[in-house]
Figure 1 (cartoon, helix red, strand yellow):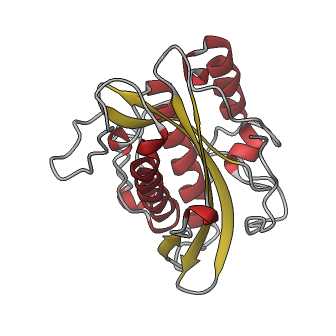
Figure 2 (tube, helix red, strand yellow):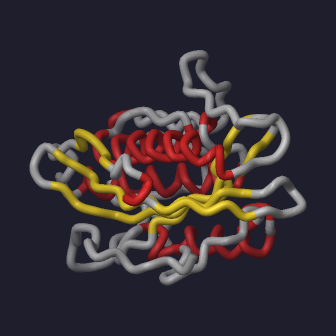
Length: 230
């Protein structure tokens, strides 16, 4: 499950690394241009998708199709939030507060960066992934907490003009009968995860966002990106 370097690197935006726009406040307390709504602290809306596990307790490879649907949906919402300023309901996909916070900072930083450099007019129209299982990778691992699924999705982000690819890895668990994302990593060169979490990572620890040292290290790294580019 070693992360493979993307054959299609993300678009290079500027010549020098920008200062971050990520603040220490939550997205609800900080003003975001174009009013992106990062609904991580709110109740899940009634019309939010529900991804139910086959069994109330535990997980199996039979949950792979539902996990795939969830990951495609969150990728679509994510890229539309990053490029278009659309709302995203993170609570519908993520249960861990540390992962939610990291993801909301990640979205805010990228949207503000693209907005500052006048790149948000070229909107994301869709995120496509092969519908055949051969087009994406899934693997089940059993453990004392009911097991988890690893998914590697070769996403193609289609915009008004052009497209680009980013492979993304997910770890999914069953929490109280509902599938949730417990880790999420996009390792394309120059991506946010590439710069903050590091490159060529092995994504195989579903409990990593519960580890205080890991979270503390990432908070510190995100702090290096903090600032304002508005």
